[in-house]
Length: 133
Image (tube, rainbow, N blue to C red; front, side, top):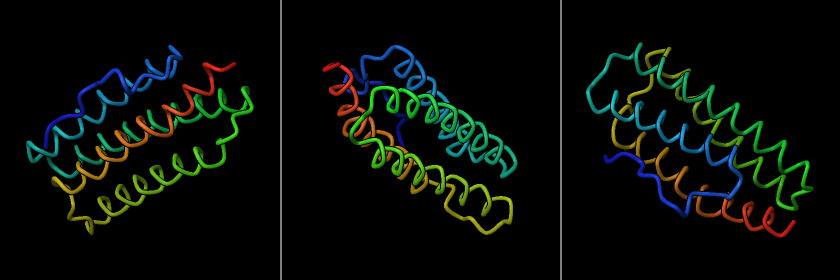
């Protein structure tokens, strides 16, 4: 599976959010590379934990900005964030228990698709909202 390539359409126009998005893409691509190179489960778990930590921090920043601007889609946007975090936690738990066998293209595709879709829809709408203020 190819890496996530940064595209202009991912930008929100909020420098702090865009910077964080680029960093998250870098972290995800590092995870994808480890999976593609058949890294050990411990390394995959470590990469997943780093991705989870970065994403959690970024979501907190983005949610703070949404609350400050009284963003009308905040609950839905936050729910989408929570959904991904729940999925990542489940994957990490399954990896640690030795029950997750999806460290392959299916995992990469799921995470890749979530980010691309989230950037293009929910974050694009947020950008439009912030630009109106």
